[in-house]
Image (cartoon, rainbow, N blue to C red; front, side, top):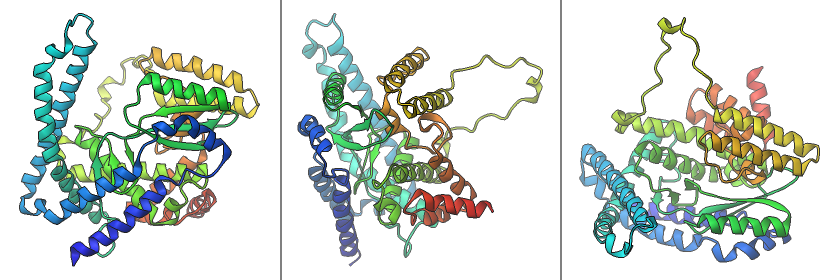
Length: 419
């Protein structure tokens, strides 16, 4: 009976996720013109969700983690992540062999590496579903501790699957920074293919486009990047579950209704994902938590201050503010020349940014859980952070903001609390 109810809920949410996956495909001449270039590269969400959904049904029916102790579950997750690390190391070695101009016959030179890689991939595929089930349970218990359940269960149930993620094609107008279109493309598109696609779209449609990598996607089950870091994995799984949580409420339902609502959704998911991920680490993997920053040493007060370092967030904030100002004055070409000049500054300071343009800011500026950065002086992120800071608990914060349908709702709430 319990399994039947779980399957019913999961089926409904999977159907909702399919609708949301295509919610940005709104009819319009410009979108169809963009898809004339991207259609052959677009990601097959239907196939992926059906496959992932079937995998999760099998996991739920077996209920294998229930036969393991907490320590055995914890160790299996760590063993699985170690497999991921070793697999990624061998993949890098394989790429080096084929890229080395001194290697006469890379196929022969890589036989041992490819054999080892195949063995590791087989073991990874065997442990992966079990590790996912365990981490889903750990996230579920963590969000229950934080008061984010209905009848003792997270709603929706926590479901994720690690896999190669689609890349995202972001399209913004040139005259203003706005994420007008966001299309998911196949994973692992080469740099040359990305640049060629962007150039064709920009020149034909007079827009700003960028193909970027993502860490997760909030369909259902959620898609999560394959990583060997338990800190990163727990945070991303939590972030994407928050998107699923919001999907059942007005804020998530209206995520694509306006740029402000998109920024609200992404900022909420970042803030909540960080808190949930850290709570999970404290409960299950405390020895792997990053150490807190050291306290200031009063004995060093007389020491001269260290030389200034390049502050990425502050430099990017300054860049965004200047670009917004230039665009507001109609100086589009000047803004684009300035962004390329600034990109070279970031590059010289170790930040290998392929492109900074309007689409770059339209994408990265919606993640405003910290002041500054690509969001610039956007007031939306600041208001979300203010509500988060003044909320007594994460549950209170999510329950308040998830029922909002506009930035004006958020402003009124923050203003009322300030008074």
